[in-house]
Length: 457
Image 1 (cartoon, rainbow, N blue to C red):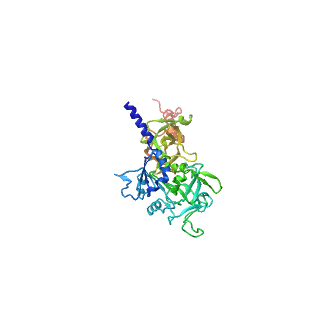
Image 2: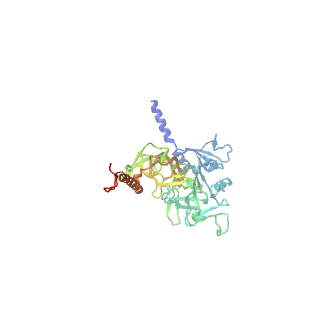
Image 3: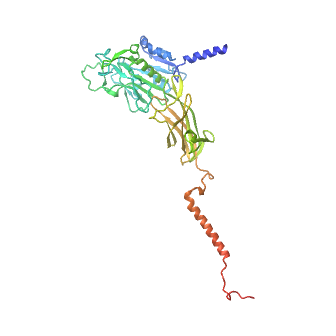
């Protein structure tokens, strides 16, 4: 009976565990506690996915993100000023902005360090006279209606796609700089959008902060340690009002928004429920190649796994096992056809850069492999897999080995080298000529004529 109760307890604990691969503790830094109810549907969705929410004011002097050098929370929503250290400690942050509330200087300075630029007047918003909600923004055109985003490149996975319409009321424009390679836009404005200050009474905007697709409405940054930072330009998009709200575009068609689904996609990616790659076994070994076989049967293992030393011109096989954490389980990794997972065999610079091919699958992983010949250069080499793509956690694997030259008894025999046959033939011709000369010299006595030889006694 006791083991049955233990089993039930473990089952209940597994049911309430958060879907995130990095923890379930979420700090919600909200300045006005009265506004908490506006986003109750969003909080309920997070709690339904197993997260433990703690609501605090960023002005609370007792609020601390660390205790004894360890994180108190795993994720943050609505950024507090101490967030940079939090990112350095692998914490994840979801920051929301609003044109109705001027962005604090501390947050603007932090975003500037990340190469995310906000309008200098801090009260500008984005308008679009062709892509707006004609029901709620008839005059101001400040409720943007945008389709769910597509992939930013053919070799990049899309975790935020769909066929619905997203409503972004009173959004703050963000402009991404070129000095931070870790930045990636999630949702951009349409080409007819622009950012302006509503307090400016001029009839036309002469020098807008950003226009068209320069404007990023939802931005992301994934640090070198794979900590994630997301900036949502419209906090109003998370309000209950806009979850499944009815909107009408400039074309007159009335549709329901997918803000709830989009909010789930944004929070799932930020809190590492999706796009998390895990490295399993990493193996390398000597190989024997059978040219008459195909597929995996053409390569067979020689010796033991992961030796520390190889010889030049050895056939070597490298295997790496990868899994992808999605929701609450590990799944096999699938590389897009337009993308490639590569192995570098390098000493200072790569001697080989090869595509790793999937050779086998398990229920929760994919094994990628390649076989190559070590270069004709001895020294300290490294197997390197450095896979970094937007919206996927970084994969960095390095294994060092020594490559030695041929031992004296490992060089090929002279008769195996076709270029040496001329010299070998010359040696044997010389030997044969010498033997013939000696034989002729010893056994060929000169003939004497009769009567001219020595006197007989």
